[in-house]
Length: 139
Image 1: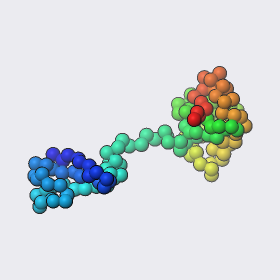
Image 2: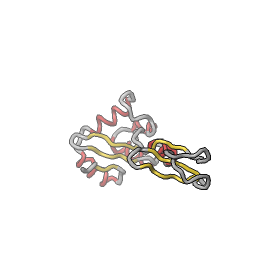
Image 3: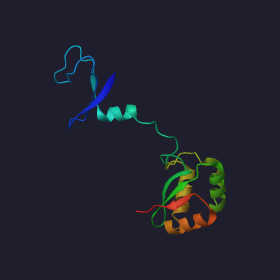
Image 4: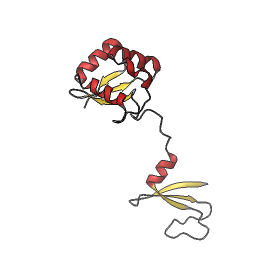
């Protein structure tokens, strides 16, 4: 069975089959049956895959600058996005929830511009009153 061990300070993760030989990489014998990988590569191999859309790459889920401060929008569900678009006065964005949150996207530029019209505190008060998934970023 392969079991991992960490070589301190070297940034390497060593996988070895301890039933073949107790020796590590420095004194490895021909029957050692192990290999080394960089810790950064091991993390990539063992980590959960990224969850789509929760990285701020789409309009409906991200952090936006406000007139003062920043706001976090989390309207992944169609009904929440539709209510948000209606209440914020941007019904033209209704079908763009999952469009890219990039400068070259006119819908993204329009949403950013809208958030810049009010402070984060004002946006949060507005969203709370309307039951919308938007909060100011604290800290």
